[in-house]
Image (cartoon, rainbow, N blue to C red; front, side, top):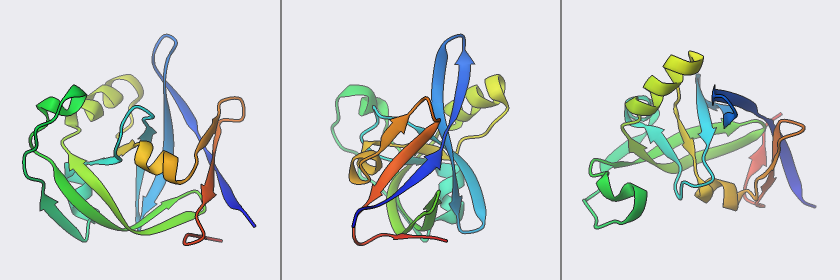
Length: 150
């Protein structure tokens, strides 16, 4: 039996005809907005937000990189004890922490929202995400090891 869940999406229009997809997540008792970023290879949380909720944070050694991440030199690996997206609960989720203050400034300016992080392709591929713009939802298919909350 395939288990799946649907997550409600918000379409955020930052500029005319320029949309970003946002979902709400829970990290134990803390809520946060996450942007769906299909172009990001990894899921990233804002450093300031992430260090408050992580069970462990370790600095990542500088690596030679190309592409959009070439200029990022201060990153950390974090373990998030509990991440709940819709009915999907993930324990001990591993992600990267980066300074996303520039992203938060943009969202504060255009839509008065703060951003906890970006959901990247690592998450989207693992959970076989299907985005339905008409229904404003995202379907996630769960591996056998994951559970749904009630």
